[in-house]
Length: 139
Image (cartoon, rainbow, N blue to C red; front, side, top):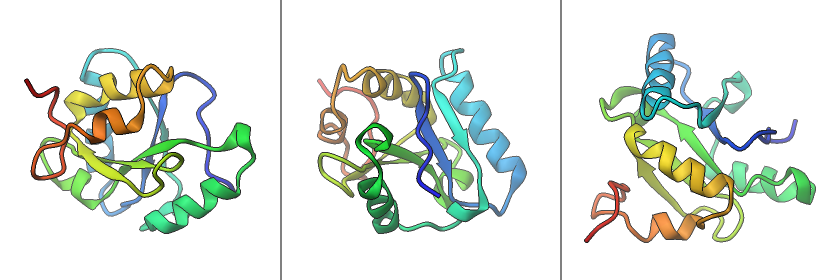
């Protein structure tokens, strides 16, 4: 089964940790509450449990051009247990494997800009702090 690709102008949030249903609901609630609009296509399928970045890259690379996701946001164990809900953003196209964390509050801005190709993955990845987390634009 190939990686799903959102049919609308949203970004995919792929669940990789299946240990806590309440945590998954909290992640979705935090993302949707960030600005009151839906910016995510949520994928929760057990086949993605613990999937590696390398496997995601391989699956994305094998997809047809129209079905090739350029990036994905992972809801992993860190996302599920950290109060700021830091998703793991992963580049699957330009610099496959490049990644950074993004707290739910910043997800809508990143998703909107990536989904309409207004900005590139690197524009955000280049702005991370020392922990590898995007926390907004630095002065």
